[in-house]
Length: 192
Image (tube, rainbow, N blue to C red; front, side, top):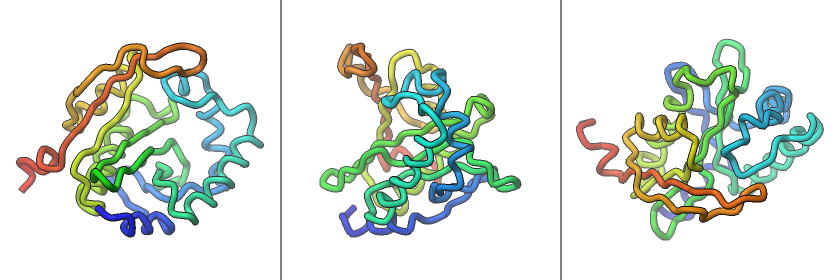
């Protein structure tokens, strides 16, 4: 993977799954994003605090437009094709071009938990990372206690690689972080 490949995120491609359209986040998504981003249950295992009001979400989405334009943001809005409603995000939280690796993150509106949307989105981003970006390794960092997120990672073939106890100071406390990962050859094994 080379740095020039990341320029494709300046005009992030729209990709689809069986039940989702994954596209660039837009300022028009503010109400849909705020619906879940203001919920402390959603952000319990995330690095960021709940959004304080709709204006904050609107400002955040405006900022994200500048990040897309710079090719410095690698996250898709997860939308329902029939309504266009944004129900979450999934994409790369970090890309390491020197080591052909990426970290994926995802968040889903609780109204859509338990319906397989996170698994569907993660599988598609893994496919994009290995197939389009030619990554060698993709990983996810999951806070201990986030059983649902661990289940999503395992469903997509990722394995628990390590646990770092009390390794990340988040929201006033040290949190234990579990790493799940998959290599390119593991992802494609048996798919030919």
